[in-house]
Amino acid sequence: MIKSRIIPTLLLKDYSLVKGVAFDSWRTIGTVLPSVKVFNSRDVDELILVDISASKSRRNFKSENIKEIADNCFVPLTVGGGINSLESAKNLIENGCDKISINTAIFNNAKLIYEIASSYGSQAVVASLDVKKINNKYTCFSYSGTVNTGLDPVEIAKIVEDFGAGEILLTSIDNDGTLSGYDYKLLEKVSLNTKIPIIASGGAGKPEHMLKAIKECGVSAVAAASIFQFTEFTPNDIREFLIKNNVAVRQLI
Image 1 (spheres, rainbow, N blue to C red):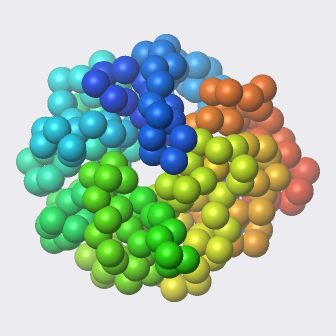
Image 2 (cartoon, one colour):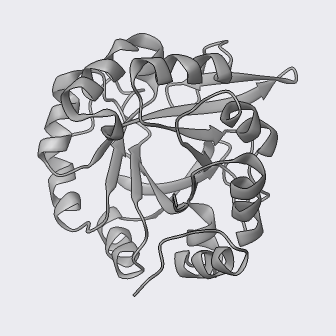
């Protein structure tokens, strides 16, 4: 039986750990290494680390910065931000990350997904789609939510699937940081039209939000940041809640 995953998300901006609302109003909330160590101790399923300023600054996620983080991370680590070539992905993987998250490059150089998947396997490629509703229509954004591509997320989801992405990190920009729940219509819309796993992201504020995404929208994993940074809920609390509601998750020994 495939088990649902609980994945904390860490966002970097100018090398500080940050959190905002709707991809805006960023505020510094600490540094990365202490947070990684905390989540290690809580035995989370995976971690996602994204440098939100890399693409806008036209730079890669620096591989020398990831090595210390990866050396202190004992769960699968996904890294994203400014990855625009096979070489930049290779540097990150060789320095300890397990998966590469591609966002802006999807729209500038989609064949990069195929190149990374061919070199390291589809399981190493996460296609990150940041989606906002404009005039009641869903559209994908690039460059950390600052550039409207005008492209439909279902259309892009099918493209990244065809290029060999192993899963999709689907984030609602509108719901991000609000703690009001995921955009369930968006999750269901993309999930019904793709075969690869979907990671729900953007808006989780309580365990019920994650349960709904898994049971009603068919996602394979739930990612979140604010719930773990600004509420009393821990990943273990989420795990226990899901177990009580008959969701298969990895149980701690």
